[in-house]
Each structure stands twice: as structure tokens, then as C-alpha cells.
Length: 466
Ligand code: ASP
Ligand code: MG
Image: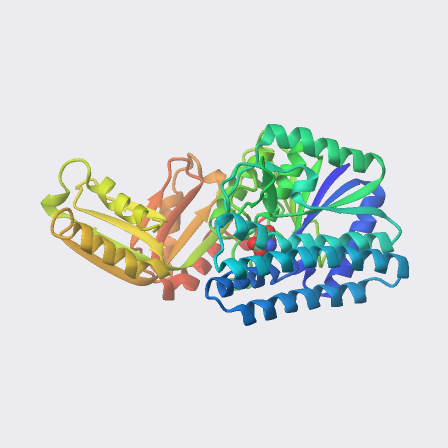
């Protein structure tokens, strides 16, 4: 098989974790043509972001201190990972060269006292550049041929939208498949840095937080991989958050559309565009734990047949707040909603869930808790007295989403959902269902969250799901 295996930062958090990852790859690569994609060592991207904040504040001392911390951590890891003196020397020279590039960059930024979107991407791409050195040279220590490649070196070409770039798939496919296939044909394991590529002017770009997942699926699509595995510290997709529901079960199989929905609702932290490159080629994905390699995890694939389980998962989004906007006669006629959303969007506030009634007297919007107060303010300044008659806010609510493609066209699901909410004694404050019927979402007080999820989990017997 041709495999792309991606390891998240939590799977690369300590020397022991990296050794475990390398042992796993060593085993997999004996039977499969394997491409490895790595996130940064856990916490490194946050530290790099911290450096950029310190630079902007003109705090040179702490920026350098943070830089020294990153450098020390990776050098220490290298010392503990490699015993062969020759490999150790090569790793240390590669690390030194990457670390001095980072140091030069940080010094340059300090001198300028500013971080542009372009230099920010260049800066935060270093976590992955360093982690692939550790993994690739450790694979060599186990007598594999391996090479670390940055996204740019691998051939990932993107647009110049720094911080949220997209791959130019045609160019990427030509470059990347050539580079990667050449390596694979020489029985070499390429270890590619996740999260970043380069635009057509060779400037480093990133895909946004969590972007290594996206790197892995871009590669899988370009080389026509047979499977892609996302390995992290979780078993796979679950029927509910195991921190909330003790008997939450691992889902053995979900469809692409269910997985996309679950990822959106935070059932597993996955970069939002991860699935895009897989859809046209229908490459199967496994979401698995790097700490429990005997566990097959969740297979994300085309649905085999219409699932008999209408609901697969109950997800909860917490830390959100609700805005209840009343218009009265001010709302009458077209344009009120457009005005509201334009004010929110100009202020960079995302409306996560929206519901309005046909009487057109009110609109209810859910936003992130940290945006709630600002949303209230900007709407008050711009629209109160003209479009809006009253603005009410309710902090501390939670969105509960019932997810499963088997709900589509099935009679009686909504009544079971709300009966379950009633059984848990929770008041439903707002409801939304898209016409795809992939999810049914509603809002309750955050205090009711656990009770309602438990009740729904029981109602749909998710602890016995096959
Ligand atoms: N290291 C990056 C982040 O922490 C990308 C990733 O982990 O996928 O967001
Ligand atoms: Mg990460």
C-alpha cells in the first residue's frame, strides 16, 4: 500500500513519544510505501506565536529567552534520540542550520519591531521544520533511509494568502508527486513538515492552526495514496466527548460527510479543510491513536449502505453565548438580516448559528463567548433604534448537535431528540437544522449540557453502536 501517516504534536511531545512514533513508522514502512507528515513538537507553535507577540511589544529579552527554550528543547531531544555518532553529527548539523535560520529571522524581526503576515507565517512554520529533523534522523538510526522535507521542498505550492493559504493543486500535484515518488521508489521514507508550503514567489505560507492534517491529505491526493492515517493522542471519532460521557464509544466507521460535520462540531480537532483533497479520489482515512497501534481507530470512507443507526454522535460546543435581537416593526421588509450580519462581519465576529422565525420579529445568533460583549456593543452602536428595538444577551450557553447521515428523510428523529432534552429537564432555547439533515442542533444553558448529552446518548443507544 501507498500510505500517508500524519502524527500530531501530542504524539511528538517527549523523547519517549518520538521513539514510539519512529518505531511505529519503522514497522509500517517495512510493508508499505510510507510518507510521514509531522506537526511541531507539542507546544512549539504556541511558543513561536509567543515570540511574535514579544517582538511586537519590543520585548527583545523575552523573545530571545523563548527562542533559547525552543532551541534547547530540540537539541536535548536530539541528544536523547540518537546514539550512532555519525547520525548524531548529521542531525546536529541540520538542526543547527535550521535553528540559526530561525535565530536570524527573529533578530531581523526584533530589529524591525514588527511582524507582517508574511514573516509571521515564516516564523511559525519552524516548529514543523525542527520536528521532522528529529523524526527523520531517528528513522535513520533504525536503519531506514529517510529524509526531512519542508512543505516547500516537498513541492507544496500555495496562493499568497498568508495565515490561511490554499494549495494550487495542479502545480502542487506535478511537483510533489515527482519529488515524493522519486523518494519512495528509492525505498526512502520522506518525512514532510506539516502546516506550511510556499507561494509562487517562494515565500513560506501556512494553512492556519492545525494545518498539518491538511498537508497530509494534500499529499495523499497528489500521490494517489491508498490510505491516509491521522495519528494523535485520541482513539478516533467518538459517539460523544468521553470527558463528558463515560461510556462514549469509538465509532468504527463514518462517512466523509459525517466526519466533516463531526470535525466542525469539535468531535475531533481536525483542520476544517482536511477532507477536501480526499473527496474526489475517495481515499479512505483512518483516525487513530499513536499510543495504541493495535486499535484500528475510525475509518472515514464512502458510506457502504444506508446506516441503520440514524444518529452517530452527540457533540457539544461550549463557551458560546447567545444574542437575541428583536426588531418589531423595524424588522419588516428585506435587508434587516443583511445589516446585522454586515455589522458582525465588519467587526470580525462569526455567527456560528442563526435562527429566525417567519413572523420576522426576531433573530437569534450564537457567537463565541469572547465575542459576545463586543457583538452586543457594535450592534448597539450601529443598529439600535433603527433596525433593532432590543438586544438581549445570554452568556454561558452550549450548542448541542446530533449528527448522523441516517437521520435524512427519517420520520420521528426530531421528536426523539427533544423528548430526550425534556427528560433531562433542559430548556431548549434555539433550534437549527440544515436541509442536508446531517445534523440537528439546538442551544441549552451550559449547565444543562452534560445532562442533555447523556440523555441523547441513551435515547439513541450510542453506547451499543457497532
Ligand atoms: N503546529 C501547527 C499548530 O499547532 C500545525 C498542526 O499542529 O497541525 O497549529
Ligand atoms: Mg498541533
